[in-house]
Length: 168
Length: 126
Image 1 (tube, rainbow over the protein chains, first blue to last red):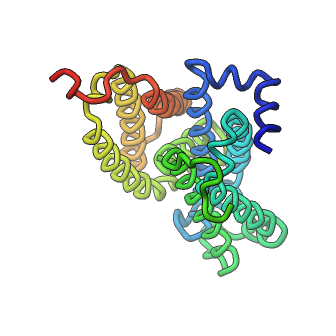
Image 2 (cartoon, rainbow over the protein chains, first blue to last red; image 1 turned 90 degrees about the vertical axis):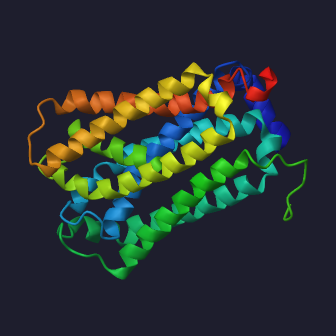
């Protein structure tokens, strides 16, 4: 796995770019802008569903969500660049593993939301308080994304010697 | 950080014309959270600065970040005032573009801070 990622990074030239003077900080900046886009749109929509900002129409606020998706895509790309350039720093890092788990939960929560509740939420009146299902989904989403950010920051504090973490 | 910049990006995008224009002042309901988050970044920022004061203060990138951050927050503060007083914004698009640039610059400068310092501890001079 480690070697596959490293090979990918080296053959595509990502490795050379990331190890140049500007590479890592530039990609990191993009990664942070991506997370701001995500939390600024999806996170704000979650807060709206939890009852904050009553009077703002759900449907209108939801128009910002595609920007959050763009931020997410940006972060998957930049995240892959980090991961493939220094796989040994990420694969065995418990912060990364927790982060991926939280992303998985957030993703499943999102799929469930768009399959079951999204249409009803968008049709709700701007003053309406949403039902417990929509609100709990919003809370899960918000908690997961905040957790993802916290784990992301924690990654740099764990410099695991190889195969270090307790559940590997 | 994500709440401060995120809410600002959301506001800027709305100012740039995404979504219905009329509901925009209702956005100020998110601003208390924004200012709370600002308090948090201020506190954690001061803590980080106190931990390695020489590292940040000797780096020009730090002042770039500070300038962009202040400019961004000034714009938000001004928007907040306008909304509270029901004043109409004269050049919303320009304002939103400048704000977005400020936030990108703040984040970019912040990230570069971790890589561009020339001095880590002032003790090297003693």
